[in-house]
Image 1 (cartoon, rainbow, N blue to C red):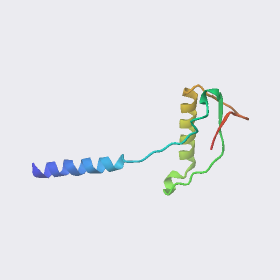
Image 2: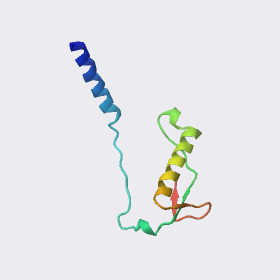
Image 3: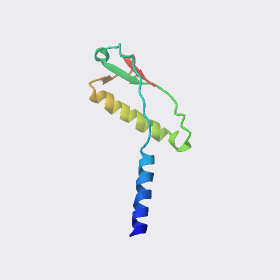
Image 4: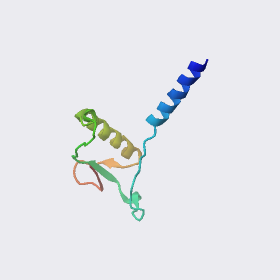
Length: 87
């Protein structure tokens, strides 16, 4: 019984640390984002300390996620000039 309790306590401690990422965002509060109608995802590079995250597959997944999120917000993806450029 005591070993099981110890194992559960350790598991909870490790799970909490795995989800303890701090995420911050910044934006200009004076800008009216409702005016933007189009977006384009521009070329950028990944610079993660983990080499596994610097792959083309990861880049494609990030771009697909951005595409879905911005489209869900009512923006249209543009091939050329766009109101918002994502790098």
